[in-house]
Length: 219
Image 1 (tube, one colour):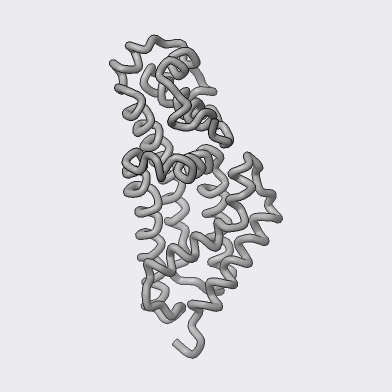
Image 2 (cartoon, rainbow, N blue to C red):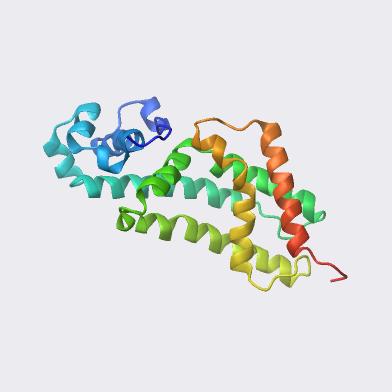
């Protein structure tokens, strides 16, 4: 059994009955999180969702297709919050360190501290090597989009003289990794980092990033 925090119920589930496809995906996300891909079964998902096996096959398909639907649904929901946060990136900072710290805190609170996304990351780590094809959509629609979006914004800061970058894509991956590094162990264990922990982690991440890429002399 995969040791991973269960996905939480979606807000739609809390508001009222879900359409069958959404109900199946919502239930399957919890089953996969709890059991892992290899330990989960269509029968398990059907029993917890209160539907028949045939309904799952009709609505989505076999276990691999259900898992792919869970990955796609989780990634799309995480991306919605992410791109809303990216819209607040400090393109014209008045205090680069303070503005980047504030952005990093929003990024952590919106995306990296989301339990469902954290559970998906854990599944990637535990199941990705055995079932790489199942995570292809996640790689393309999740981290790939995030890195590209942050890279574009860092390139703008470099163009305007705030940063000194040779490889914006690498810098974007490093910034996200630094912000995430101290918070991920807590979210993987199902714990929500406190405001003080997010503040400490993001401030340290931005300072480390600026030591590497901050403009050393006049723009």
